[in-house]
Length: 371
Image 1 (cartoon, rainbow, N blue to C red):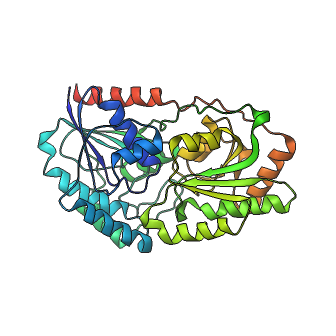
Image 2 (cartoon, one colour; image 1 turned 180 degrees about the horizontal axis):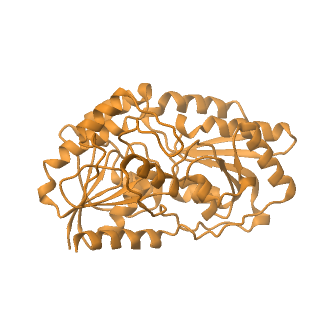
Image 3 (cartoon, rainbow, N blue to C red; image 1 turned 90 degrees about the vertical axis):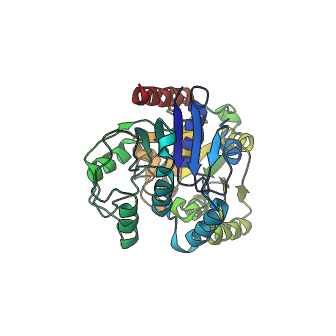
């Protein structure tokens, strides 16, 4: 048994990265002494309810952690998610406690840590001024500052770190910034029980955080366009709402209220989410440049026909199928209409991202690092 610290910058966005954090804690807790370090107001039990996990580990927050998390969330609504800032602060705080542990596991991207580590990268958070494999970059003075504070300005990750990425897309971006290409370990998504295809509703589910970067309103526009083409589909918007996105959440709430065929479900239980996925035919992911796409993978796991923007790691989730990918709202309308009118059915296996596979590999990575 090893003393393992899990580092996660914040649980407050309640998205795919947070699901990975909860699953890592669950995968390790029976074999190791696990402590989660985070700057969050959200409790781990909330993630268990959202993601169907059973993580029950010690959680440490910095002094005045709830107040700090609340301040950062209020700033996020105006300036966008400040994940690099949170991670830099978490790094500085954790270093004071690192000697208590045998190993660290980051579930929130890359860190410069003074002990052996396994680092799960959803997308690199520092050195964002370095162009990615597609030549794009989004660097700014604030990220350069947080990169220095985090100890990664030299673009050298610790030699004692084992790197893992959530997709080949993310792995290529890590390689571009740090000269190391991580192995790929897709996030955990178990098959979701569902009704036979003929008994499912001809409706669309768009799940995930209600947030600007998820482009939740694009899902509304797409279904508007589908209905204008004479195809009678309804839409369920299903997702968590964080204080950081309160302005956008209000826009989405207003859009749903103005349409009889759009239903908004916030903070639903895992059972209710699975009920919606398993009873509908189509799943829609509108985020651009998704690093993997947990919601998209859940559509596949629920036996739905899944559509996604043609960018990022979500291409891997749908196996690069051109008739399931779109570049714009009008093209998404075409894809959905064609699928409905042609009677398209799911082509991908529901168990391709199983939880057991993920848990087993996480335990192997930790065992290799502490051996």
